[in-house]
Length: 225
Image (cartoon, rainbow, N blue to C red):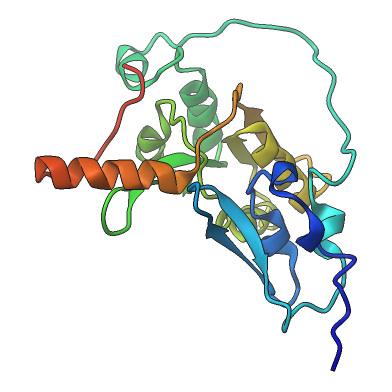
């Protein structure tokens, strides 16, 4: 039997038009899309042709395939925290931790990037925090593309439960989260200034090499002190 080309899917997208946010996999109603690391260590979607129903949701929601609404710049501010411990753990003045603490103190939830351990090496993933102590691992710049795939349903569940959510990440990640959630007065986002991020597998393989070379287990990593 001949199979139809999936004209409405992201299959024909080139890698240059993909940021690896995983939104297409999150919105697929039949779970026909999985994210995988390619030979460069960056994540891209892979479509299971046997499962794909050609519904077009992946292409319709793709932040790179659509001309999304952009917010106007209202002003520029310079912010730094007065907390010396937070300054030491931060890389650029500690603005994030001040916003994040306020959200948690007011009963909200914060999503940010952390290091995680899954076997050898370190991964950079996003995590959920509703306690002040859980915000500490989110501090510090991590010049690696983090995995946010597992965060989509968690963020939606928090918002549907009536909680305010603060998400911080790269511009393409925040665009994907906003596209997934839609219009909501309970979703707040902070976009970091991004010059392009290396793939997560590249970083994991480097940290694995470091562990093998030193015969020590890495538990933390600082790109900037």
